[in-house]
Length: 61
Image (tube, rainbow, N blue to C red):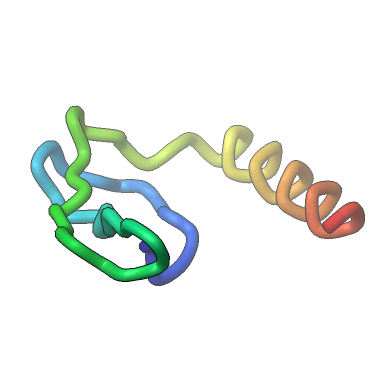
């Protein structure tokens, strides 16, 4: 379970969501989903490339 898209920067150990285990449609357990490593904010050009990728992805979904 995630509340939205992830955006850098993300710190190592930061909670980014939750894993929910279910059996027969019933939630039986949950655990936090945490980043295993730090992800730094990208450069200007990598941000432009990411914006184009998100746009194209949005066209097909």
